[in-house]
Image 1: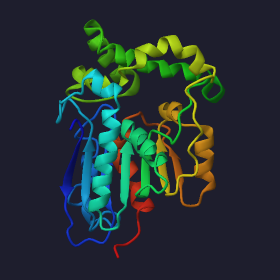
Image 2: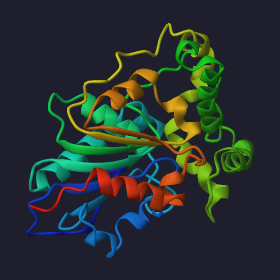
Image 3: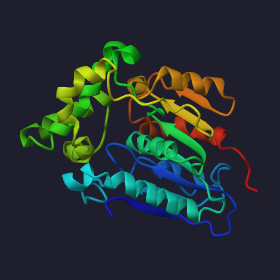
Image 4: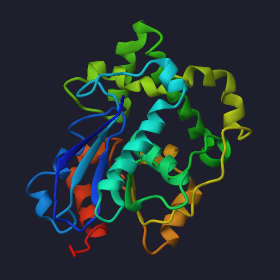
Length: 280
């Protein structure tokens, strides 16, 4: 398989739903390191739970990058669904508490949308909302920033652009890593974006690329994002969160896209409250 599900901590006598951490772009083993420490596992929200980490293919720990043929055929989405089903099957309740960032949140929303009763007890969605819209009607001129995907995808086709693409991600979005110069490799999931150049007018005007917004999700959601992440959300989704007593929306005004790792204590403070139910 191209994707991987690792058990970080097993709690064999637990009656509580397992927790799955799902990394985003660029996949990093450090993303949720602060969330699963022995000390944090003694916090009420995490005590007595089994913990898993889902990783897409990545340059750090699992560099088995899929070929274009596998990407075109949706191999990653199938593997994601199969591994989450597997984790839910191991969970004592048959459900999962999912904490997902960026690409991981995108896949989680897709997974939930495709199931009548998704096996999700609660979702902590970081950076990405339940629905995408690429058009001027939703985002105004900010809709043009969706073209960043074309730039990221180009690095896989034009080797001369790879260093520049990596530097631009660091400079614009605030990514920090000793291996940042090589992070273009984790952008393989933008493989189809260069073709968007021909389709961009249709997307930006709202003529295509739209699907009904996913607003009736049957599980509580804690949603945190930075100002940069507004492009990965919709006004209707954020209103739905504000109107539901079981959901919470938090905008971290001074954060960048990688706040889950760089400002983990702020995120953990919200998670501890959102998942504060005591062990049964």
